[in-house]
Image 1: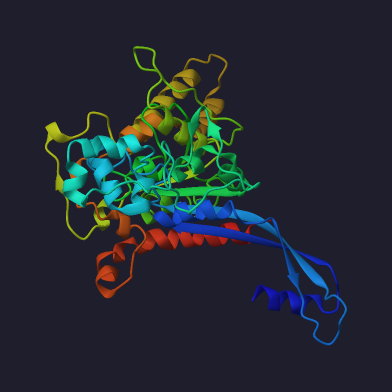
Image 2 (image 1 turned 180 degrees about the vertical axis):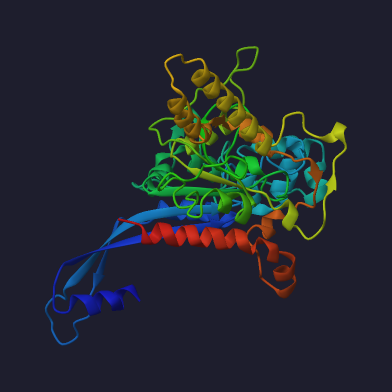
Amino acid sequence: DVQKRVDDDDGDKSDVYHDVTYSIVGNSLGGLYARYAVSLLPYQLQLQQPNPSSSSPSPSSMLNLHPNVFCTTATPHLGVSRHTYLPIPRIAETIIGAGMGTTGRDLFRLNSEKDVASAAAGGLVNAAFGGVRRLSALRPGSCRNLADDDEDANGEGLKDIDDEEMECIIRNMCLRDKYLMPLRNFRQRIAYANAYGTDFQVPTETAAFLNLKSGVGHFVISSRHIPGVGEEKGSAEGSTENKGGDDETSEERPFIVAVVRTEQTSQPQSPTKRNSNGDTPSDELIQMSQSLDALGWTKVFIDVRDRIPVRGLAKPAWLRPQIGSLDDLIRERAELQFQSLQSSVTNDDSTTTNAGDASKSSLTIETSECILTSQELAQSTHAGDSINFPLGHTVMVANSKNEGYSKLNSQGRPVMDKLAEDMIDSVLGFE
């Protein structure tokens, strides 16, 4: 189809250059496949025009490809190891991952023979899967890729990184420039994540690549509980722009808890926090989280609790998380900023009444400029104040693969309508 349109436009011209933009949306594992695929896409394509009546070389058209929007919905960017709906020990992850085959080993980041060997020592792997073993073709200390081979541009095998082989594709795509640079070239990167424990397959931490030990700052640019936010032009890469004002955000889009953004930096923004004994914790997951954050992402946290067809139950007080929800955290942070600014205005002797009124009117805008760390987001979105069936993975994207699914997930259509509107605005607004 592209070739036909180019032929129609070019006529008899030769070596004509065309600029083409492309955007990608990937759901669940599709987001991981898309991240891998963009590392293989060229920046320019040559289209040879047919010229059957002549023996001379046919004129060609060159397509310059410009990456625009890259969006994922409920994608396990960090894999699922340490990110299961209910915490399970590593040995259980090993058994489950081995039983799921190649994809399972990737998602659970089974990166060494020791993982399988330790489970086999207890007889669990043999009992559950008849002695499932790692593929003999793999070297010790490696993890099978989603692709059969992951070679660099020169055709050579992967090199050691920090004295550790990095053949696990989940780690590679978070830490290696081969995968990060093509993703960085997109004008916008957006990640949708279910909040409050509603996604069984892909919990919030991996969908939004958060980490309890990371101090990376996230700027709150839209929230359903802060008035006046989301009005800055071009703010959430299409997904945060509030064309209808505050009423649209709080009333027409109640499923959007908050939209936050990380700044694009050349290196991870925040040093890893340390344990009390001074040792650097969990290392790999923190590096993966911060490496992705450094690309600059817009993260959209979705609340589908009232859209799941099975009504949830309120948690008793002793089961509720000690830290408040993301809604509470943003509201409290905004109130503190408002009080601080209001106090500053009140104590300023040189401020006239009119000037004070003008300053007060600007406080609402200022409160939208709060910053939350990755740690705070992970804690506040982990669980809500109710127990819900975790069906959010299919509800958020209104999965309609059959009639039953269509009815079950129909309440998620407004979420996808919003995503579609934002994508269209971003695509049409590309300059």
